[in-house]
Image (tube, rainbow, N blue to C red; front, side, top):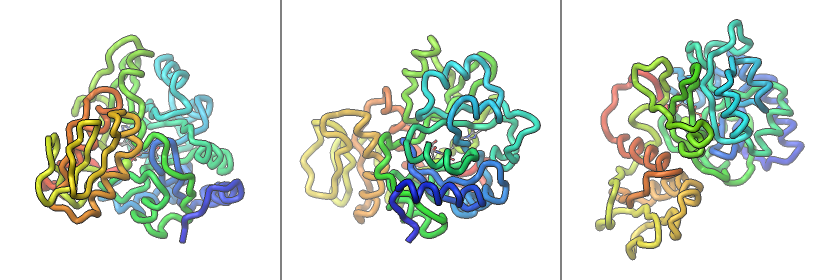
Length: 328
Ligand code: TXA
Ligand code: MG
């Protein structure tokens, strides 16, 4: 069994494993990551194989902080302001790659940009310190599936493909990092996530631009279908139907005899975010015809939850096997 409690000794061994080119799953404050030495193309290739990705998708490189990030990317004043406000934490910055760079092209799928993030989780930070290399890590799920927020989820997704799964308990935020692209003065929201848009806009003093499909920075991992449960989702349901499971939110959830999880009975979006992926996973296993999902307010963390719900609901739509981009 590759799950191992994230003791100091286990983290030290995981760091050695990463440094010698193995892949290791580890907790971050957002979701569990599947990490490899970002300087080692062979190690990176193991990530894509383990996730069974139909195509290479650019990865987020995890570093300890701004100074380390500056070794791999050009961090302009706007990007520095965002890193200063939110690192360590759930913000990934897509920045121009330094050329030449110690990071192989495979990490950013041949793009001239690179995504960087300084995680806050103590286990992730201790692993980075032990490995002494930047760690490229996608979410530790199979391609297109629900992101893992516990070590058990990782094992259910990837079995013994990771050399180790460091167990640091459930992820404190529960949604992936918010991804923004910075070019010059322009800041583009590429993926909603655990850092609400409003907090970034407060620091910038203006609204965030949305990614355009043909924009200079695109986010290739942003496919319509993602986070796919096997059970169909019925969004904005007022009440569950017979044979359905219910994903509820808030104090006004209906009484229901069937499988039901309330993401936050008191209607708190942060609590809902923490519970979201585990709830989706558990209702998916309940054997229902469909999962009815109550409406979730579309502000703050609700924006990211609704984004994941739409992608999960789109999973049933047919998608060509080699769509432009790949699930992440
Ligand atoms: O919270 C997180 O971000 C987690 C933890 C492990 O850090 N990681 C994660 O990675 O969610 P992944 O691979 O599942 O999603 C990375 C996202 C994808 O949407 C990808 O397209 C985007 O970041 N991305 C990465 N590099 C990029 C680049 N150079 N340009 C545009 N988008 C990029
Ligand atoms: Mg992912």
